[in-house]
Length: 592
Image (cartoon, rainbow, N blue to C red):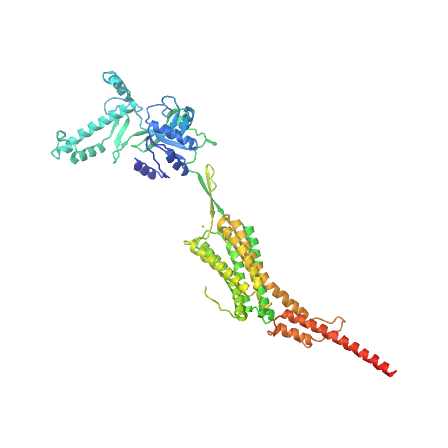
């Protein structure tokens, strides 16, 4: 039966979402929970009256109730109020649920059923030569005779048995000629004969006649093709709302019956919750803000690149290796660019092209990861270089709001991979090892007596800065689902950590070069122009220290020594003038 239902449903373009079953004496709760979880609203059930009552009672307590849910089932039950307990008691479901008569009436309201009519609703003469009304009279007289007066059956089944008897008689009668061709006869019939079975089946498929129950014929599978009543329980009564004529494949609705649904809009309930797909993308204003900040960061990095090139021969820059500084700044630019690409999604791009979105995902990774590695690996190489020169050590190799009638699905575009564990481990592992190695190098070079070249303190601060922001960004990436919040926070952390690191590493150099330039162009306080800075002794000293000197331990110390020497020279000059005055006074005294 189940296979035939599936075939009929597929033929009629009806989708069967799921199926569940339970034994006659079994608790139907588990099966009903499966149906509830599937979100279907039309439930087709096959049952006898007693388990059917328990099914509806359990469905009430699981809130599978009309009119939200529509029940369809058999309609052959002889009892008028089959859903009620015949003895008037409450319906019990394994001492778990109980339902009063009022509850059962509520569950039965709107129940659809199908059933072939027990009698043809016309005065047409049937194959027996009797009209349906005449047959009822004959059957009623027959029921009064002994021993059939104790028979408790009714017309619902007697009419079908009567027509079935005529089908058997017609089949046997029509098979006589076919059997004769095979030198067989009905007198030679015996069970187990394939010859008789094939002939009976063939002749039965040819039967077409009007019976007490209506037109009668059979399908290729042996199912009866006739009239089917479509019924619905309305106001505690089974009413026929339509008839389906199988021979003609014709549906005729009973216009005199008004089918009313107890919904808010009085319309038929939906068969399945409506699904609305809501695209959640990065808000355009947020993308503009983050892209602008990233662009400012890129301009800042370009400024530092120009500064690095312009003053590459200055001791303060030269000792920190301009080429390595260049690599750090290129890595920072890549990190800033990754913020812009992290904001590109179907909403910003205005397309759902999977190939384009897949390319964007790859660009994100190949901007941020190499940018991070270029920036910090170059910084650590610089520190390692100083350690090799001054410490004489060697390097060792080392991832639906649900309304009653609407299911809202939030569609979020994410970058995924078939092996997320590998990629996440590779990215986080390499970055973590790099940061740890940088801390080790910063610690080992902390006591070097070369202030311009020793970035151990700034490296430590930069690593601390990146660790805080990176760990927070990783946590957000794994926990926050809303694209706008996630993009805003991750992008902001990338910008803050990158900009903070650049400020820690390069702004002191910019300030130092600026201060040295001011010292090299100072004028006398008296208003007289001082000699050319490059020709005076102090000017030559500053010139040598800015552009050429690499023999003194510190440029800042050189400037301080120069200032002290100037003061000593001035004091010596004053002392010489005083000594000269003393000598003149002494000479004058001797002359007297």
